[in-house]
Image 1 (tube, rainbow, N blue to C red):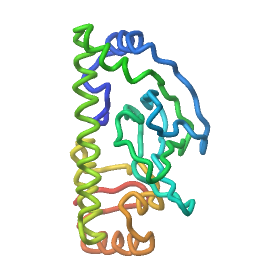
Image 2: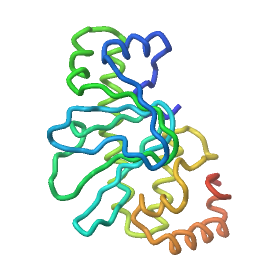
Image 3: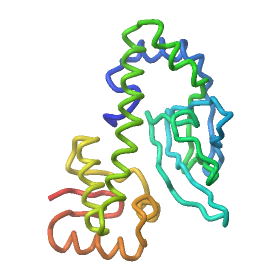
Image 4: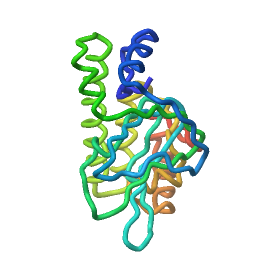
Length: 208
């Protein structure tokens, strides 16, 4: 399991108890469907149960950029992100997604229950949100594509605790996530393979 999943350390009965407290509503989305549009007025908060979704920003020219991606156990919502009117932000399904929806206020209410499961949930939410943002900033702050890739792979190794990784996103989308030209990124991946720093095939990457 992803160590930054909001369900980390929780058993099945604890998760069932949490769903009841959150009064969560499960919904299903097909590929390319919009799951949530961020707005200051929205209190909807979501947890991905299954699938993969992208947080996409849309600038004034209509161009889309991948800001983040969400896999099983990821949480997102307008109240968990900085409020801004500069760009539009949508979360769209990259593949079939099962998503829990609940009101953001329920996060605080779950804490008032003083239940072990809810305390775990609160701690996981805080950890997940702060660490994900820090990780992406660290990746983007690297000055070369090589350093961006190696920093990203290093974090994946830490998150999944495995030296053989299956990338959560396709390589074409990874280039967008690390803000790099796709052709230049593919050339750098080839160099890393030739230098025996990594061994990669498609979405599978092994750190040597």
